[in-house]
Each structure stands twice: as structure tokens, then as C-alpha cells.
Image 1 (cartoon, rainbow, N blue to C red):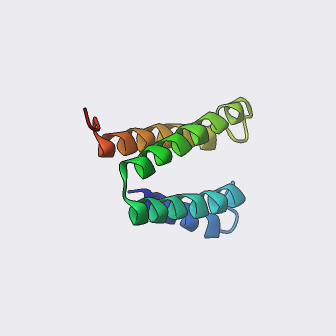
Image 2: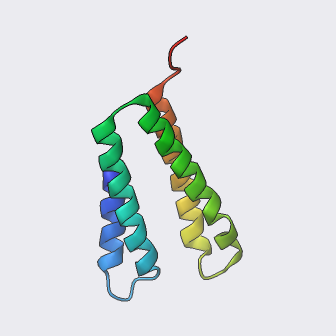
Image 3: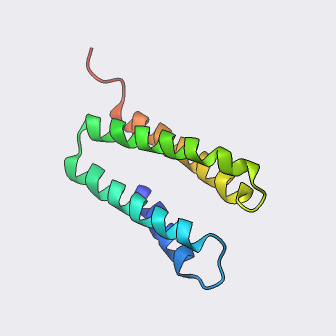
Length: 97
């Protein structure tokens, strides 16, 4: 799922005249890189670290919600960050007892 998000960002980054092209480019690298690293390592800790990165990303979007130019982008990213964090935590499960 995360790799698909990275590719979607890459598509947006490549569109001439698209708003926030640079942000989409940065996020394309981050999402595809995170997908590759998490898949390569494949441990519960890797998924937990991925969830932490997603929460931090969502938190960085909160100040952008105050800027009209970035509001829609930031809201979409914040929602996506929450969904990806939940997916990462769900993939780990409850862990060992």
C-alpha cells in the first residue's frame, strides 16, 4: 500500500503546473524508501518505526493547515498519515505476551 502512495506522489510530482510538485517529489522518495526498508527488514520493530514516522509526518502537516495555500494538501496528508500509521500498527498486531 505504501509503495502505491509513493508512486502516486511521483505522478503528481511529474505533472507540470501541479501544485506542490516539490512536496510530492519529496514524499515520493520518502514513501517508496520507507516501503522498501520496511519490506526488506520485515520485523515488527520496522513496522512500529514506520508508524512513528507516519505520526511525525502527520504532526508536521498540522501547522500547514493554517495556511490557505497548503490547507487541502496538508489535510490530505494528515489523514493519510493516520491511515498508514494504523495500518502499520495493525500489521504488527498485539505482539508477544
